[in-house]
Length: 384
Image 1: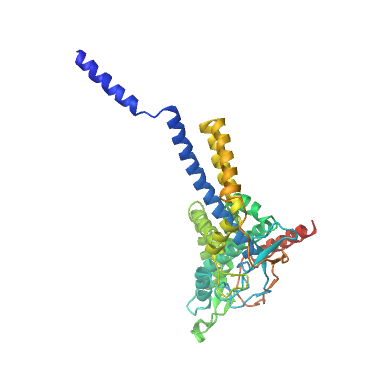
Image 2: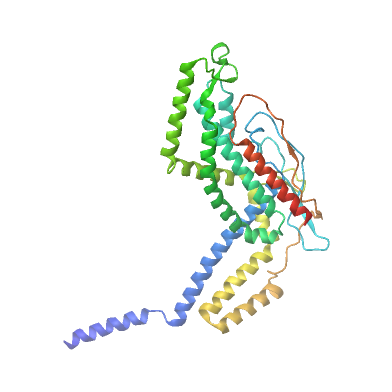
């Protein structure tokens, strides 16, 4: 019996000896928490760099906000080229690098919108397909207009605030836009039902030409009655899809719109080689090094106070100060190059030839009102 007790005691002693001590456990908690917090901070910093780039895209006014212009139609918008300020210094007077985002062929492409435009111009396009195209075009235009307004407002903030606050602001707006899109999609669905009262007059005589749509005549009762029946079916379909199809479509269009904003190419400091998002993110880490290192220092020091005690926290803080200022220069900025005086923060002027054709675009007036509100907000910021 004593041999059994001795064996159990030996096992318990071995297990207890393998348990980490209080200091060891605190070090493990400190290290794991710092790594997790640092990972989250790096993701946040990258998102801030994305939004900084998105602000410059919005200021350049190249987003697809108008269904009367390309890429929704073959008409090309007239956008005055501007230079946007990026990586602004804290000198007196402040200077900046310049980023130019042109309205060229590459930046005018959109896979989905281009496909919809080609379908509309195809001789084989039908009223049902054009109905869905009109709904999607209105939704994309609405979302681009919303993001354009928010990003242009954020563009008036200092860059470090855009990096810090931008991800939270854009996350809140994206959530709000998803909710609004549910109701706007219903509006677009109902306002574009007029497509089912259209007929392609080129379908018989000029089958290879671009479709020409005209209203059904009431004098043709069968066609008119059929159109009314189809409209009724699509109203019923809307209610059937409200809890599944509408949320999926709203989520898809919002996600596509948001990610496409960061796909534009620009030219930094009049260089011939176009730059994209990766270059801007890399340079954001480079020229906003102090902001990043302050965040890293805050994470490390606060967790040292939390898990290792006041003495360790003070030692950690002193170590960062000594290494940061006197040994490794981690708190000294990297000087920017190609600096020039600040350019105006006004958005680029955009105009679009109006096509007075037969195409129905539901919701276009509402989108124009939203853009007008955006211009009013921009003008109010200028007067402050």
